[in-house]
Image (cartoon, rainbow, N blue to C red; front, side):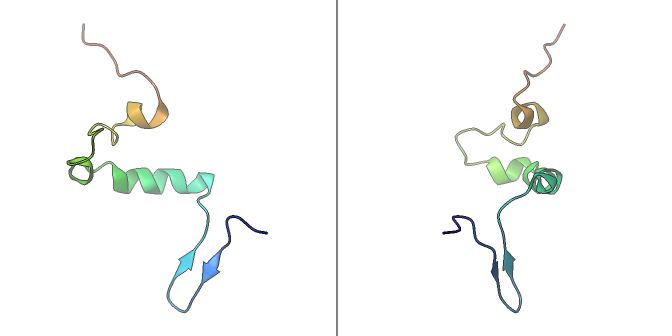
Length: 58
């Protein structure tokens, strides 16, 4: 049984995410307004996406 099938119709293709989708998704998700009501409002930031710590101010 395929737990992540690809579903195709006349106007829509739904498929599992692929590693090459990451940058395109980030381009859409980096709009802070999308996260305005989310509990983690900083999710759009690059350091949140990669898991890296943000740079500290000196």
